[in-house]
Length: 179
View (tube, one colour):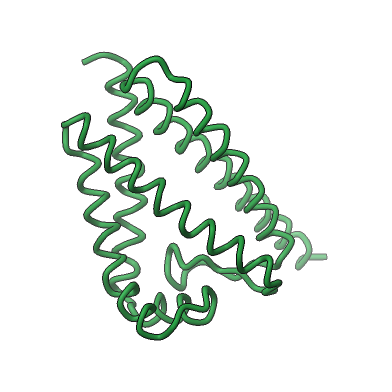
């Protein structure tokens, strides 16, 4: 097994776990995710109920599908994940433009706390910039294998940066509370 294949496999496992955990958390408490869809994303009740019960299973299916060893199938799954990410990003842009002051994407059910509008906007700008750069790299990649590699690597680095940013924010909040 080549190094690039090992890296792709590790990235697929990482994102498979992230999607799987997010899906399982939502399945464990449908009501919380449906509430977020209705009150945060402002979806009508029937869309929220349907999406709230179907979307976690889609996440779990995509998580398992990332481990299928067929390159074309994995490429389709990866683009599906990017498409879903773009849909939620578009919803978030619309919400920020409507100036809702609280933000909770609902990705991990109730375990994520609400953010103020500045943090939400900063996160959104970082996501748009990272996604634009990633799409540029993918578009200019010399082969489909490199496209898969760049997509996975870009998502891994983006998640790592986001995770560090979340740790920094929580540390700042703890320091502010202790003072």
